[in-house]
Image 1 (cartoon, one colour):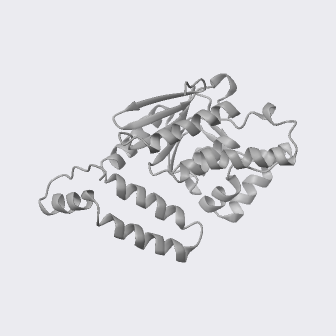
Image 2 (spheres, helix red, strand yellow; image 1 turned 180 degrees about the vertical axis):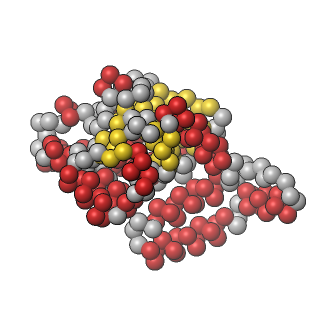
Image 3 (cartoon, helix red, strand yellow; image 1 turned 120 degrees about the vertical axis):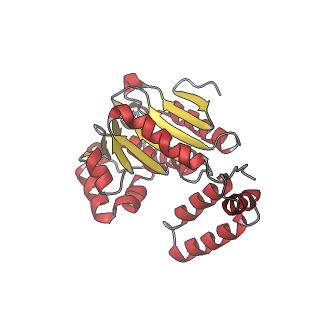
Length: 260
């Protein structure tokens, strides 16, 4: 696919995805979501890619929401289809990817933008970022997993307050309540993101994929999540990376993982 709304570059085994609509504060329209879905599928199917860094172009916004003009005339069936397709092809696809996704939030992350960041496995925010779910001001609720993921991250009471008041919170508050992993000065945002992903990409890729699957399962049912963890733990023993990791530990050297 020839991308018009996102930039895609692979550097040192990290796929850098940048939503590139700064004149629209990187708002998510149908075309942008389709391009993201394509890029996510490529990341999952490209062994060279070990992690994904997702950010927005410009200094003002990560993603300032969805493109309201595209759905202003929708009825209930069209609205449901919009949410279902977006969740399946982009937001759930990110959360369930075998590759770790890190959102580098460089400004406003509102509505669908915050939902996009929450779908990622790690969130690093610039110190001047503002985060919120303002959908109720439009007579809507979050439709791309926001009600579920925000509750999982910060708890029911805080999530409902953010959704029902539509208030934005600061980067510092986001870290305080567990919505973001780190808040850093704007100039250090990509450096911090790369620092984290550089550590992750040195680890065993198949083990990382298993860890993603197991940590995601905790949100559904603890009993089944524990069973899944046991199964994924067992699978790791059959990988070449496990053999290499143990050998490197015993030989007091750095492991060289191959993702096999």
